[in-house]
Image 1 (cartoon, rainbow, N blue to C red):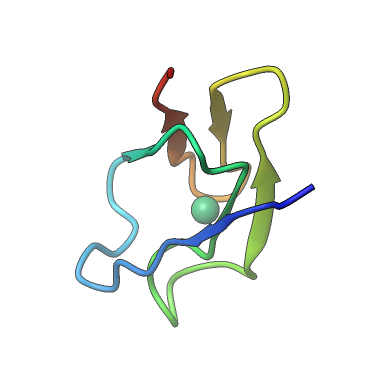
Image 2: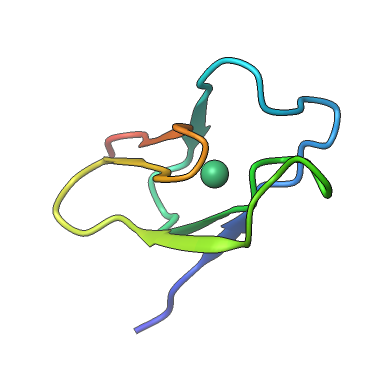
Length: 68
Ligand SMILES: [Zn+2]
């Protein structure tokens, strides 16, 4: 099984309000570090299982996978 990981690197957007990150339908896993090297958090991986939405427990970012 091939697992694609999307690394979210968005240093221009430090932690502010919870964000919604949209990914394409072929992404199985996302990585979040808060989007900031200092104000962020340890990189954490989240896997889309039977859901198309996961929320980062650190920074409340929500990752939404597009339905096919
Ligand atoms: Zn996060």
